[in-house]
Length: 50
Image (cartoon, one colour):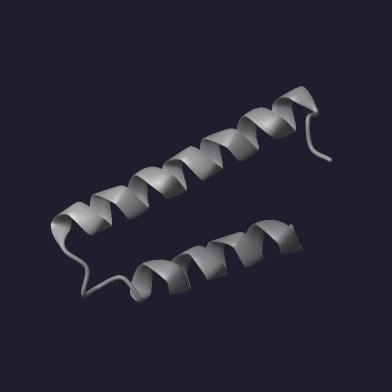
């Protein structure tokens, strides 16, 4: 529960700091975040976490 809250807070802070990025930079950052979240989800489901 604490880990999930920490991820949400850090994610919010990261997105707040990205207000001056161009549209292309914002899309790149969003794609990276979605990919990281997807990879974490697959890792959690398959038990591949170290």
